[in-house]
Amino acid sequence: MNRSFRKRIAGLLLISALALPAYAQVQDPATTYNNGKVLLQQQKYDQAMAELQPLTSGSTAYAPEASYFYALAALKGYKLDQAYQMLLQLQNNHPKWESMNDADYLLANILFEQNDYERALSKLQELQGTPLAAEAEGLKRYYLSKLNDRTTFEALLQRNQNDKALAQAFADKLIGGWYRPQDRRTLENIVARHNLDRKRYLSKEALSNQGFNVALLLPFQLNQDLQQTARKNQFITDLYAGIKLAQDSLQKQGITVNLYNYDTSADTMSVKRVLDLPELKQMDLLIGPVYRSTAKMAARFAAQNSINVVNPLSQDLEMVRGNTNAFLFESSVATQAKQAATYAYQTFTPKTAAIVFENAKEDTTFAYYYRQQFIKLGGKVRTYRKVNSSQATATSTLFKSINLDELGHLAVFSDKMTAAVNATSVVQSKASTLPIVTYEKWLDIGQLTLRQLDNLEVYFISPKFINKQSSTNNWFRRKYVSKYNMAPSAYAYAGFEMMYYFGRMLQEYGPQFNQQMQATGVRPGVFYSGLGYTDTNSRNEIRQDNQFVPITKLDNLQLTVVNPVF
Image (cartoon, rainbow, N blue to C red; front, side):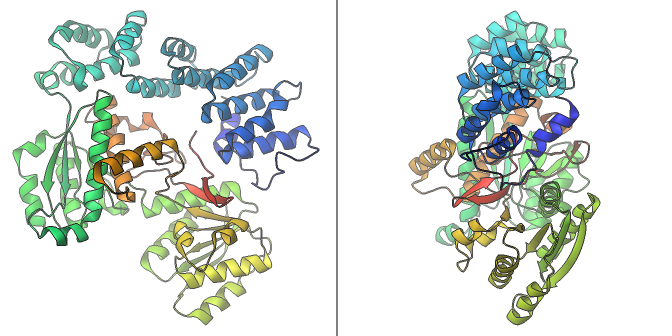
C-alpha cells in the first residue's frame, strides 16, 4: 500500500460521521464511497458492503478502493467467501492498481481465516521486497502461532523448508509443549538452517522445561481473615480467575504457562524476601506487585536480572519509565490523553479546542498532556480553564463564558455531575453538533440519559472498553459463570487479556520479547479493541504501556469504537 493510501485507511476516515445514510435516494460516487468508509469505521460491516458494492463493478476512479474496502468489511463481518471473491474481481479488473500489494496482504489474511495456510503463505511470499514485507511476516507469525494441528504444521514445513518464520514458529511449538525425544534431529536441523538461538531451542533447560514460568506477585492476603479478605480483595480474586482461564486457553493452543503464586502486600520487606528467593531469577515473566513502592522494587529486580515484569493495574508511567524490562498492562494517563488528542486533531475541524478540567491531580495531568499533544500536532487551544465542580454557580458561569464559535471541539476532563451537565447543556443550546471529548465515566452519571448523549456528538475515552455483544464475550461469560458461579468483572477480563497477550509473546519471541515488540505493532486483543507497545505516532518507537486507547461513541444507544485497529 503506498503511503498516502495507507494514511487514508489508518485515519478511516477522518470524514464526519454525519455523512449521508446508506438509504439516501440520490448519491454521487464520492458520497457513496465516503459513506461506505464511515460505515466500515463504525463497524457496520453489512451496511458498508451494501453501500460500496455498486461502486465495485463500475468504471469510476473509486472502483479499486471500493472493492478493497468491501473485502475488508466482508472479512471483518466474517463473510470470507464474499471477501475472497471481491479480491479476485479486484485483481482481474484492476491488475495495475497501485495498491495491489495491500489486496494481496488482505487476501492472505482471508486465506488464513479459511485455514488455507498453504496458499496464504504463498501469497505472503509475493510481498517479499515490498514495503509490506515486515507486516506480512507479522501476519504470518500471528496465524502460525494459532495453528495447533501438528500434522498440518509438519506438512507446511516440508513444503516450505526455507521459510524462516514458519520454521521458527514450529520450533516455538516444540519447546512450548510439543517436543518429544524423536524431535531432536528436526529441531537441530531447523536451528542450523535458519541460524536460530541454540541456547533458546537446544539447551537442556529449553528441552526439559515444558512451558514458561510466570511468577504472580499479587496481594492474595492468605494470612488474613477470609471474609474480610474477600470483601477487600475481590479485584485480585477476579484478576487471578481471568489469568487462570487464559492459562487454560493457551494450553489448548500448545502454549504451556506454569503459574507460581507469591503473596505480596504493600510491605516492602515481605516483597524483598520474595524477590530474594533463588527461584525468582529462573522465571520467564513477573506479573505484579500492584502497589507503587513494591512495584518499583520488582522493576529494579527485573532490570538487574533481565526478566520482564508487567504491572497489571497501574496507569502511572513513572513506575516503569526508563526500564526496558518493565511494562504497564494498562495505558498510562499520559498515553490516554495523547492518543485522545491525536484522534481529535485528526478528526475534528477546525483544529481548535477548548479544554476544561477538574481541580484534581489526575484531571489536571490529563489536561496537560492532552493540550501538549494537540498543540504539538499543530492545533490551537483557545480556552484552557480549571473548574471546581463543587461550586455550582461558578461552574455554570465558566461553561457559559466559553466562545463556541468556530471551535473544533470541546474537551472536558471531569467526571463530576455538575461539570458534565453544564457542558452538555451549553453545547445542546448553542452548538448541538460540536464534538465533546470526555471520560467514559459520563455514561454512569444518572442526570445524563443515554439518549441525550447519543443525540450529541460525545466521544468517550474508553481505555478498558469491551464489546459485551461479541460472540467472544459470550463464550467467556459462559465459561466464567460455569466455573466461578458469578459474572466476570472488569478485572477478570483484564486478567485474561493480560495473560493471553504475554503468553503469546513468550511463545512467539521467548522471555526476552521486549526486544521484539516493534515487530508486533498494535493488534486486536481477545476482548480489548487493541493491544500493543508500539507508538505509531512516533516512528513506531517502543513504549512501556499499552498504546491503543479506544475512543467510543454512542450509536443507537450502543457504544461503538470509532478508531478500530485494522
